[in-house]
Length: 145
Image (tube, rainbow, N blue to C red; front, top):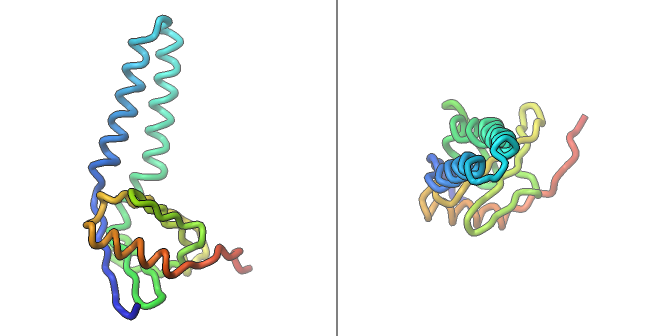
């Protein structure tokens, strides 16, 4: 694997559809209930939790990371126009429809993760990413002091 792969990320229409469906389900649940007050409370908590999770975990990653770069054995994330070196952790998971990329920033040893749905990149890029992650398995290491 001596090639360099520039895997460009884009917004996922599938993830947007799931988010909209779940929020809509929460709102509709309040109208379908026999006890509107209790259902409205549940609905507000449900929708608030989903929105908080989306803003905390999914939205910032999509906005700041726009490319995953694999060169030889080096992984880089392109964030805000600069390439940041990362170490991919062994807890990274590859499914046919989603990649959960778990990594550790080399500059400050902080851990991060990135959810990459299949429709967030081209089919060729997704196959390259999946293959590279399966071939180059890195065990989770404890942070050095």
